[in-house]
Image 1 (cartoon, rainbow, N blue to C red):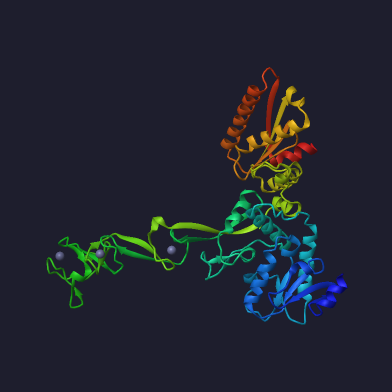
Image 2: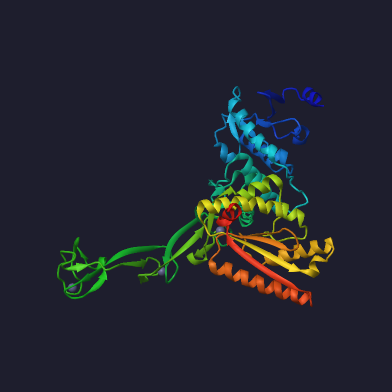
Length: 457
Ligand SMILES: [Zn+2]
Ligand SMILES: [Zn+2]
Ligand SMILES: [Zn+2]
């Protein structure tokens, strides 16, 4: 089959150092036909539009073996690689660098066992794609300045997933941060028009009386001798300063007079005031807004976390195992153990106050439940506990009796209060449901950084 394909598409597929590249020079190609054979794609054209369309076609593909394919274009293409979302540029003759890059990306791709579940919500797909891309490229998703984008920034990979210059998908990266899959680093703050979300705003002072932008500014002069205070223009007499009230000349600032402030004079309504209103005029939609109406948003760089790497490789085990779970704090036991080990190392290194909490429930009645009922109880209990957590915290259930939690840098107040709340509420709930049963709830905790000491010592 491999040879048949190559004979039919002579010249389209070529080998370099045992890697197979698909050469594409128009947007008319069917990726699916080649998926099993190729290691990378070379877009052999100088047309930016074609490159962009081909990239979109590849990156928006739901099959993660296809959308993660390394993509290269000729060196003659003038745009910056990263701005287009390419993996690199090559000279027609020299594929050495492209081959190296392809090998490193393909090695990472070979680790990935998770498949993008097309049944999943689109939002979820975007998040999994983003972390798989960040993982295989070993690179954070970095915002790039771009004049054509509404926000002034683009994320090439995210933009290629859907149509270009849509800012909406960025929210998906923020959700990935809330799930602990990515972490963000502040790069910039932008001001957006409250009406159309565009950042192309002109800020200017306006008259506090009539709203006109036609203002002039004048210094105010205070004559010490007679205490007269007035705009500088009323003191100007033949290029010298003379007081309009007492007719004395003003010679030395600090001795004869000072300039206590500045005044704004409106050329439209002649209103004089020391107060103006800063307003923003949106170049895109024309809306004029008060400064307090302008929304400030943060622009972040997103890098994958150790939990994110596990999810990129193994998929979102938490939600796969517990189908009716819609809490993002709740993850599967295996994944939790991986995360716990990594976070313990990190907590030791950073000496932070991340907390590990163990909840143990003892109950004769629960131990007599059948396995289905136990499973249901375990998921429900974990969801109840998860409902008290902040987005960054994480919980998992080993079985119906044991639950483990990790609190990321909690305040002592939050952590202590949480433990009391859990103790009280779980005891009360079990007491109400399982009358005459001997139940007890034991909650213990330690700093995550101490966990290794316990195990070894
Ligand atoms: Zn005015
Ligand atoms: Zn005077
Ligand atoms: Zn606007």
